[in-house]
Amino acid sequence: MDLDPPDPSHAATPTIPPSAPPTLSAMTQPAHVPSSTSHQIIPTTSATPCRNLNPQNNAPASQAIITPPPQMDPSLMQALEALQVSTRDTPAGTSREQEEALETDFNMLIKIKENQGSPRPLTIHQVSRDLRQTWGERYAAVSAIAANSGLFLATFHNGPDMMHIVRRQPWTVQRQNILLELHTPNRDLNSYTFQYLYANVRVYGLAFEFRTPQIINAILHRIGLPSDLDEQLELHIQRDECYAQVRAKLRVHLPAVDRMTVQVTPTMEHTVYFHYERISRICTFCGYYFHNNTDCPPRIARIMNGENVMDPLGRWMTRLSYMPWNDIYRQVRVIIPRLI
Image 1 (spheres, rainbow, N blue to C red):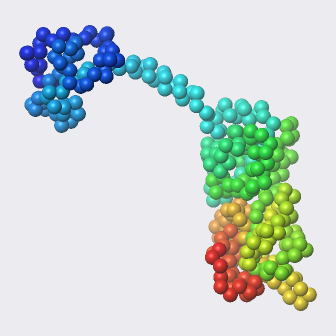
Image 2: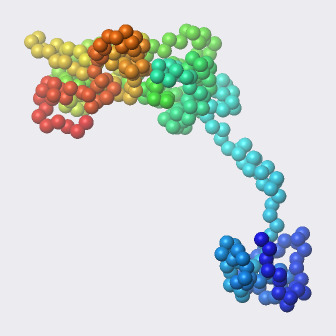
Image 3: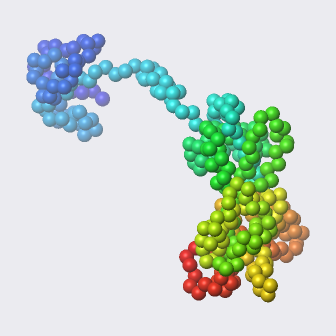
């Protein structure tokens, strides 16, 4: 918008040529500059139409506004910004990291089972983002080996970081548990079976005096196998009056177990209930991992045939709120329930 014509009394005031920017000493002088200086003085008047929109026009009439130095060439600024972006760390999952992943010695294969409710394969961006949030800086990169089959390769900085991830299973990507196997160079990808998933399992309803090594071992062989990566710590087994926490090696090609009967004495039996920590999906109809009952093909087929379908397994396997607390409190003789 056009400014008011300058005051004739300042018509003879010399101005600095555009090619000569003000010096540092001139830029640090107070805003009130005498009329004899070499800077152009732009008077402000109340008649300026955009006075309330331009902050410079809101300055008092006695305050002089110094002409700012010339701006940097926009094309040069864009070139500098591009240089800064190129020097930053490349996010996980990019082609540069995929190339690095093939050159390191600490690699692990990731298998993401297909979700029956959402059969679309996951993208490398989704996998990389979720792993970066959960694994942090412990892993270096992830690359797609066969994305349509849910197979990816994770690369780690060193061996301890990789084993830290292996020992602290289970992990999830897009709310689906993932399976891990150590990668061996030149090994046929079809030879990897992805049969096991390590997880903590809570055994509810077993009183303290019955949590013997023999009974705990029998329970572990019923739900899977004892973990060969961890010890069964007494602290975890006796940590709570309602449940014992055990570390299991789950066989994902077999159905999960929701409960079992344990012979605690020659004349007494207890029913114990299992809750699988950090396992996101177990079907309460067929018992298999990686899908819910609403996405179970055999269950859906029976419903479509007009059958009255009842799920035989308990939802407490993945949701504690469905645990049969009355039976548990009676068996462990707890009078006042604890906050779980």
